[in-house]
Image 1 (cartoon, rainbow, N blue to C red):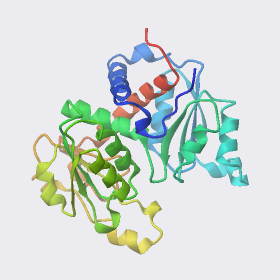
Image 2: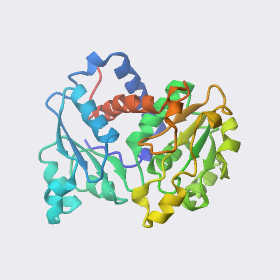
Image 3: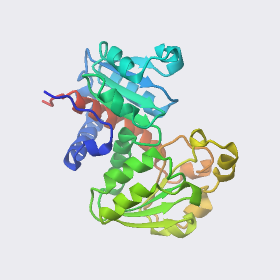
Length: 307
C-alpha cells in the first residue's frame, strides 16, 4: 500500500480534511481510547529551524498516542553540520522511525524529504511555503468556534508575503463555499501575486487593504500574524514594518461580538497582552487544538484503523 505524505494541505481532499477534524473531535472527547494507538511506533521530529509549538505539539501528540519520539531540534548538532544532504538524512532516519515531521528554512525541502524515504513525511513548515499541520489546527479552531468552515469572512493581517500559515490556510479555505477574504498588510508584505491569481481563479471574493480598523467590523475571523524578522535581508526594513499593526482593546471594540481572533504564534508586538482576556481571543485554543489534530494526522498517515 502506497504511503501518504502531507506536504501541502491540498494533498488531502476536503472530505479527508473533514474526516481528520472529526477524528480530532473524537480524540478530544475520549483521549483514553487512543492512548495506545501508536504503541511501538516512533515519530522523528527533524527541525532544521527553531520551533516551540509545532515541535512540542507533534512530540506531545505522539507520546499521548503511546508512541516514542526521536530526532533533533538543532541541525547544527547533527551530521547536517558536516554537509549531509536532506536526502541522505531522511534515508538514514527512515531506518529508525515510522513517520517523520520535518521543518526546514528552504521552500521545497519537505518535498525532497518525502521523495527520499519510504515512510510518511509531514511538512512542519518549509520556509515561507507551506505549513499544513498548522492549517489543520486553524481549521479545527474555526470549526469549533464558528460551527462551520464555509460562509465565513476572514481577515489576514500582517505579513502576508512570507506567512506560510496564511498561504496554507487560504489554500484550504478556497475549497469551501462562500468564504470571503480581507488581505490586510503594508505594501511591502502583500500576499504573493500567484496566490491572488489562485483566489480569483477559484471565484473567491477578496479585498486588499492597508487598514485593520476599516476591516475589523466586517469579519467573522481575524487572523493576525507577526512580521517575521528571520525572512528579512535588511534589518532596517524589519524595524520599519514590525509594528505596522497592533491589535489592542480599542481596535477590538469595533469588532463583532462573535468574531474570533487567531494567531499561529509566536507573537511579538502585534497583539497586546491585554487582549488575551477577551473571550474572542482564541490563539491559545489553537495551540490546544493543534495537539489533537496532529494526533489525528499521525494516525491517518500511519493508516491506523478505528475499532
